[in-house]
Image (cartoon, rainbow, N blue to C red; front, side, top):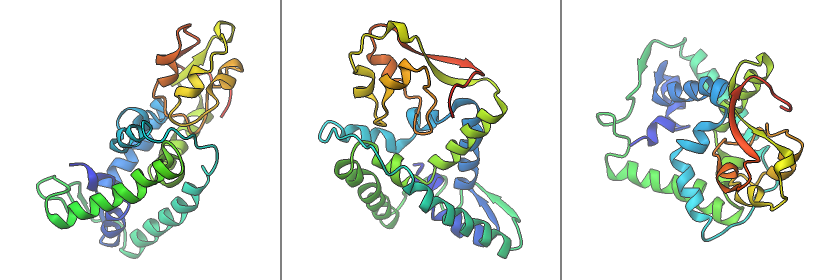
Length: 226
């Protein structure tokens, strides 16, 4: 249903025609949401998240490096979008349902094949080969929008959703680190009360698994690390 609204390809096609399409609007909303909710979209809404986490049952491998890869892909992609928009003479139309069939993304065999290929090559296989949520770490074209939004929020220090810790309650059971789908050293971060991390998706897995209330959600403006 939502495949085309998250597409990195359709936004290029629409920009070449001076059209603001659904994915353009969605990516903008992701940036805005990150100003107050960080990468909460990744932890709670992203349709690719459930697929990746389901694969953890078959391949529970941590990802420790390579976060920079998505930026190598993202920067030229953004430059191409901007170039095409300028070449088209700017935007002349807003079409949220661009290239969809009455708002439905996958409505024919060709779009179904495209969807399955993307699902297999970018989400399923990387999660199995490189580790859990590899797509989020290495290939996601949406994550940088939210990372930049979060960094913007950290500069201006307005209230936002975040994680906070009570280090003295920690029993060093390592559960929070083991449960983190983003392979972050949550226990070490919690002991230093520096739970702000660009790869944190605020999913709450570290909270759910802790029996001693070491980590909690909070909504305030303090940030100890960017």
